[in-house]
Image 1 (cartoon, rainbow, N blue to C red):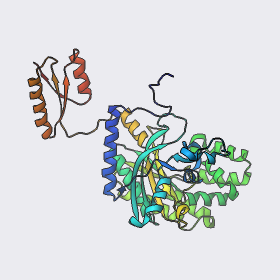
Image 2: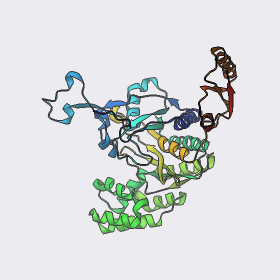
Image 3: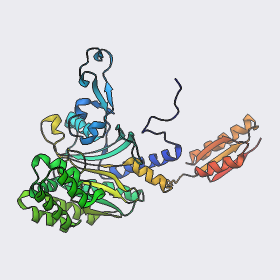
Image 4: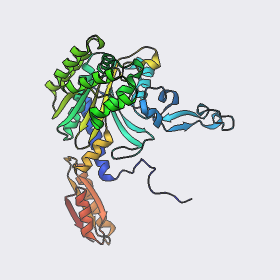
Length: 415
């Protein structure tokens, strides 16, 4: 069987130019989030299949890379169900592993606990621009903080990071799952159909209100409920006034404090933000994960044409492990999409270090080569980045390559 040189579908090799940007972004992530008090943690890439299939991950649970049992545990002859063959899987996000991590280690962690986690995740998804089957995720989460301070800190930390990476005029879309549920109740949709209604609403930016109306009617929902829903979304605005309109209109159908909390989050972020972005109320924002219980948010960028990050409050997930609910809220940036956009705009990593290249003639004596190596040693001790290479026949092309890599000072040494 012939060996294959291309990576597995949906995965990629990372060349030095991209790796330089990835390393720089990771450095900025760690430095920025640490200023907000987040602490780095790490969890295994393999999780118990029960955790990954707990109906907390929405559509992602259909995309799990499952792992067969090992050794004596794997018996193909007696297996009757998938559970007889599979006991683990590659994590599809970092939130489920974080919840298990916190449940297992809470006694050794501060309260509230501010976690920073970066690592690869895997989804058996259909690859497309900015979407892979193996990709880096970067999450910050605040566990044990019941107030809207968590949402404010998460949004400010994330937008501060994006500002440092020269992203401008992006948008933070924000909503509250409690407002979504209040809206569904007010319109008269049956409680058992809320999730289906939300999925259709989430398509608003793609199919418009008319498309949403048609899909809801086709799904069998009553004309009165659909008409009320249409009136709501044609009237509401994408600002604090829109939040207040929802509060007044939904009345007793809306859980107490949901609108007020959202208004406070928007006002606080607008007041102290450091990056150039807008935060808007988007009552159609749903987020696919079923574990969200309160405010939810996404990062939208025109240059990508979609979301490059998102998150929200998930106060009930950790309780699935411990039996006691723990307040939790998180924000994940689309690391791969951020890096892709930086590459597409020709982003140059800021570097204070001087980069020099020494080219040594192929016929140079060992003594001459040692002289160059000694000189490089002295330069490196001063913080200079020095690349030593043997001079190629096509010296012009060699120099062009080095200059493209940022080596503006190129010195030649002959025999």
